[in-house]
Length: 293
Image (cartoon, rainbow, N blue to C red; front, side, top):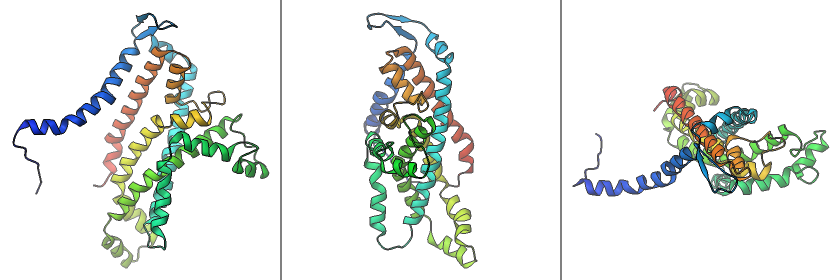
């Protein structure tokens, strides 16, 4: 039987919904509308005059090879971050869901990275991967790997992927652990009695039952990789070397702040928002069909 809240009048219902509507309006719809309007404008270098130029900012942007390079960099970076953060988060959640000694301490330590700001996490990893000084960088160099994210674009990409994954693992770990604990143990025990080995039980019973959690985390992690990694990239590599780690969100920031190209930066933010909306719609249209609720 479905439980539905019944209010004596519309006023109380409207008052309860108003805070969420106000937050959405102020922090999403209004800035989005401002970015859309700004994308049709061009300002002079001193910000004294503004001209309405229709789609000129978009046309100039789509003629720039660096923008397509940033799109490719963003998809590669996002794919790596989403895959590794989900895989490692799931692995740690499975391990923490076992009856082992000190499991509460183990879970607490795994949650701590989520409390670290992305820029701070980036600084911590810079110390470890700094060529010639960092502990891990020196270990790599002793083993014949000429590690240098300052000059090597591949190394720089690996560095920001490691930081972004480390910063997101705790979030995925919490949701996967909650999903694992909600699975009835009687189902798994019945499979064990039937002779199913642990790996078979995981892939045929546990993982399908985790599909709603996995689907939710895929959507959240893609949004994280596209938008919330600006601090990591700015602190670790500043988009370099030679733009090899300049993602779309970092290019929006760089062109708007350093380049003072507000119209072009706004056009980039509108395109970025459209890409994320399309990706999310595709996931709900095709991936959600494989989810077992």
